[in-house]
Image 1 (cartoon, rainbow, N blue to C red):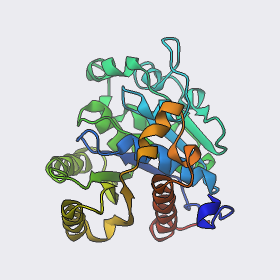
Image 2: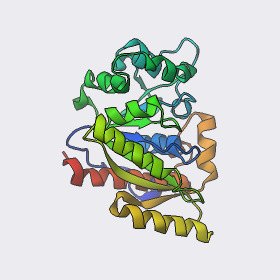
Image 3: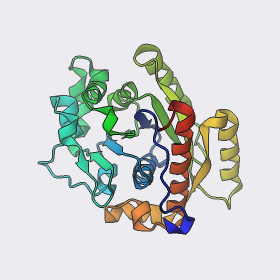
Length: 277
């Protein structure tokens, strides 16, 4: 962190807990990478963060060093069996102020099991309502690459959606459907829902296409787009195989520096949204 000269900087904390879903039904755009690295960046600079892994692949849990076995208790047990979320949250090794509710392969069947349950779209919201928000500054929900019941649960439970958009061809193709689904959830289930942040990922400054996509996204979403863009980085891809975020794996890498800047921008934007303390 000292590479940026901000090692001891404390970022502002929001006036109340910000619950954000990191969503995009297109796979491979950097949802999990964004969730994990923003969470670590925020926690390293004085914010208290909970990551909820809603993706059955459990990649966010792996990147945060969570042990996942067939015996592990996970977010599945909260959604389907009404287990207390507080009992499932585990501290992330070597990162103070950061907790994770992991996902296991059990979650793959949750879409089917949720269908027959009462208030199936708001199971996660009910779990959050039993959690004391005063203990947290951010809850980041890593959504699966689909628009099924798990993603709907995330959107009903949150107030903000963060959309990572890949700086490549077809980047905007799936976003239109995602926006329609967000509008549907807002109309019928969660009037407070809003897109608050767009993050451009996998940016390659050597190609004209990446610049064109970035320009098109900024033209469409305007101030919702963070100024920071996440470049393609080998270190970002390597870090999860060591059970780490790129922030702890190689703090001096271009990917870590970019996510640090994105986290800082997100934290300081919070002042304009919900006040600060």
